[in-house]
Length: 122
Image 1 (cartoon, one colour):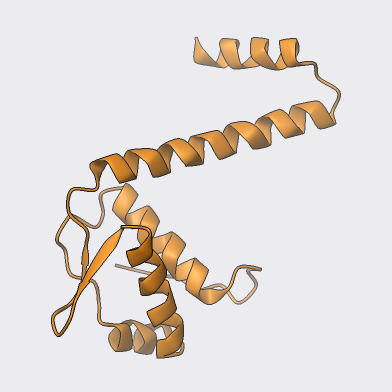
Image 2 (image 1 turned 90 degrees about the horizontal axis):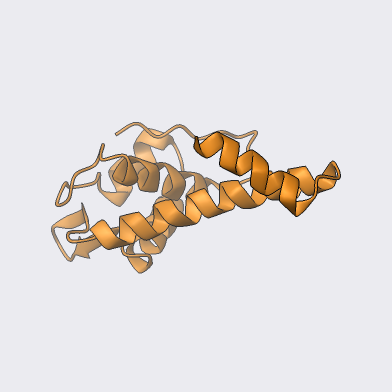
């Protein structure tokens, strides 16, 4: 698993870690039950604080993407096919919202936007 931290990003480092792990899970690059690096190992490899990686793992766990077993480590959560689908649907909806906002900003009507979506669906 390769995580790239950008100091130029406006996102906090823990969010960058979360986003990249989520993306890897959604893409199937990290399989159900696969063990993630320990908090300390990930922190050392990224050259960030262990507190930062702990926050990322805590957020991923609260969202249901990973499970942590005391003394064993963190693993990609099992049985999260529905969770993955919901996350992917949210991403598609966000892209559609941005497209609609961009269209409205240039003065397109809802009818014109609907026609554009219909053409793209063909």
